[in-house]
Image (cartoon, rainbow, N blue to C red):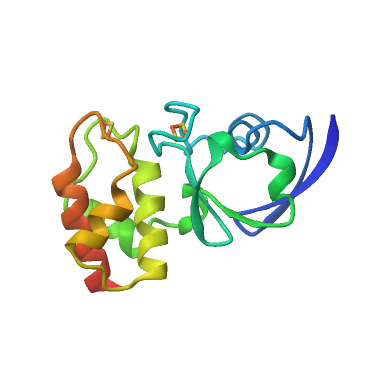
Length: 152
Ligand code: FES
Ligand code: FES
């Protein structure tokens, strides 16, 4: 076990964990940030997506010791009140069905729009490709990303 300092959603935390513990479990089990979901555990579904220094990454395969000096943002920190343009577009398009994948989808979309504020259809499809949705909300996700880009 080691003491690891983290910065999550603008706040500083110290956790006592094995450094190889994936960030996902530190967020969920130590910091009670359960908006980030476990889907596959092998970087194949996107449910666990968070931002590390503004870039979308899979928290299920990130050893916490590797990210101690980085700025971590989870779905809880994307905005305080759900006012982020991506969250608003998700509401406008009524995107979620069961909702399980949606935190990851929103975090991937937000990172895309941060890097590219006017993505075309191909760029949206490529960016969102690794985020799976068992409920098949893909068309609404695509439309919501376009709306969010317009509203940025
Ligand atoms: S749980 Fe991390 S990509 Fe599926
Ligand atoms: S909304 Fe159900 S898995 Fe995506």
